Length: 484
Image (tube, rainbow, N blue to C red; front, side, top):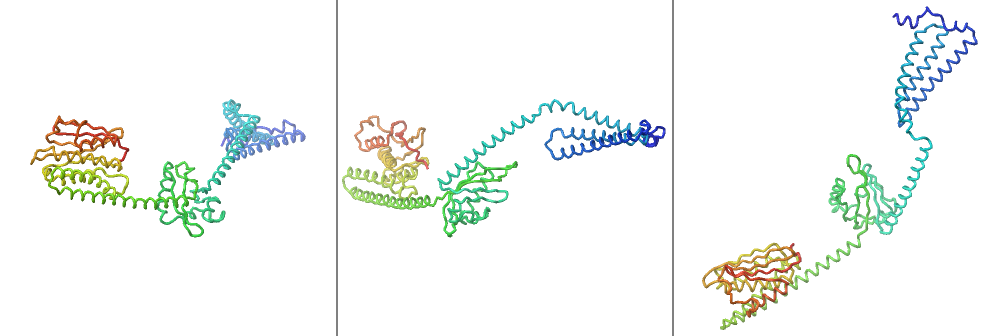
């Protein structure tokens, strides 16, 4: 209470007006001067606060507010100067001055470290230069963007493609005039919403389109490219090639914008269908050819079989060998006729059928003999399969006739496996008595081995003969990646 008494009830002092001898002119001079100064001091902080509120990007906003507080405090000292002319509350005036002093010291303390930073701020001239440079860059980029847009429009016009741009957030979609023209619509006739596009997709194509779109929206590296049918204004369906990509994603990685093109591929689809029909027709014809060749070869086999019915065992054996050779070629055409791929033959199936036919043919001699087939999952064309089959026919036939003693069984192994450098190795081996050392493969006079040598040369192969623990023929020949 004593402090408040001293602040507001100081009757021990005389009013400040006594110092001016209460001369009206002098008193009112100080009153008007202090009042105008106080009014100005109170107006400046209001302007500063308003300025700071409007300019959120202003550097050092706290310093501006400190200046505002300092000026308000100064304005209060001038108001108390007027008050003390008639009321001697000098303690109050001193307290206000002390507060002003504290605020001014704080302002100065904040201002001093800021001065070096403020000096580095660009001046008006530098800002004008920077602004001019920025405007020039904007003009250049705008021109480049306009040029790019013009080139894009020329490219689209030249290609005949339509353009679409989808705002994924709002589902608004831009469909270019050419896009709508493809389907028989006028420009801007279709509503600019993604549901419009969805309603035009053929029902059978909708699941595939949704799946492709979903994968691309999750990962832009997955291509968004497919062919589908779109309904025209006339109600007909048109084949369209759709190509697009996500061009914008938000901070969470979610797709927000996607653009692409539509291409009329109706003519291409028509040509593809014509080509497919033509290929189907040719496949039927080729199957028929293989079927007729196989039947003709079987007729030849039947004729040869009739010739084997002779009392001369030598002639019967020659006819049987010829019959086996013809049957090996007939098997190629039979397998091709039954295969889905008319240009390649399944080697494993063919070799097994061939070995079974040979066992049946030499059933009297080979009743105790077993043939083991180990063939990789390979496919050969007819030009390689026929000589390869004839080679196997000759070598297995020789093994069944000569490799084993009468009434003694044995094994014949047929193995075909791939090697490096696009090569195959055919091995025909038996565990019989072995090939005599007197037989010279290079100068042999037997028809079977001469045929083997000729056929190996025909397929650009090489072969070696091993005579340990029976006889083994190893033939290496090139092949052109005929595996399925």
